[in-house]
Length: 286
Length: 84
Image (cartoon, rainbow over all chains, first blue to last red; front, top):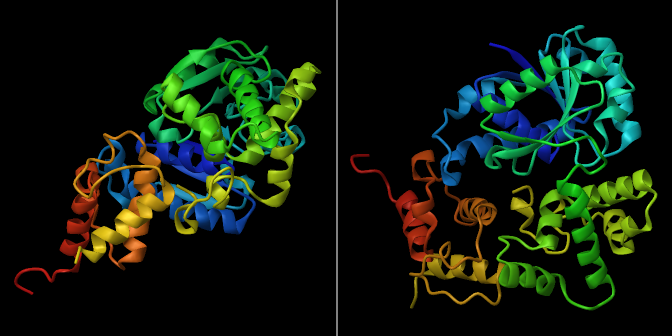
């Protein structure tokens, strides 16, 4: 049974680890924060337990939990066949992690960057194995969303891409392969929409609920852009729109000041209990 | 007097969706304002509020479709098992 590595145990890391374990893999999840690991352990147990509620299989919770090892030591990823990296959307932070992974991991280990906006070629450039790296933009909640963006970097080899495709198939994912450009397809469009929706609230044109109701009621979207922002994380939205702004040097991506203020104030959405909406504290991580 | 459990659950849902109109017998998922993420919140709220642990076998959508279904689920957990 192949060992898979997961770096970062935030919302996406938990989802990826869960999905990998359900696909029959042994998983090592690394996060440098003991608190985040402990919180992640609780979320994993809860998500496995509630699998049936979301149309998934009935799972043996202890078997699933036993398949996952949590660690604060990046060294435990040394023998992983594939490492999926899910840390904060910040190039400098990701660069440091990839440099260390490149030193620690076996020469044939593949790296998968789970990023919402940072170009894969740019991330691969900090490693000595750009041919062994590809991008996958998983959607949240990872185990429930069956479609992902698959992004080869400039140097990604066909063998790497094949192996990543196989892994995605094992995870029940249908990849849509797109070229490597900041924000890919999904977030190039979505982040602008969320940013503009935040401006509507910032300028007092409409409340968050009114904005979302327009999208739900008029367009038939299951969730409005600001509910989606709370689900993704307001901080992640800000980092993504900043990444687009910096990469394209185009003022149309100018981040809404409300997103920055909410991020500074800790109003990060569901995960913090409050964002554009307020959530039950006990269930904030839902 | 109404069922306290049902009324408490009803209040929780109305607290989150103040404009939603539904009775305790309505399928709240078919009304469209509730998604699977809120279903997870409901499970956690019910377990915490009524100090019950819902067995894995009972964690099915059908047990959460209506407020009365959820109230019955809570009552089932509170009853002692037959033969004990």
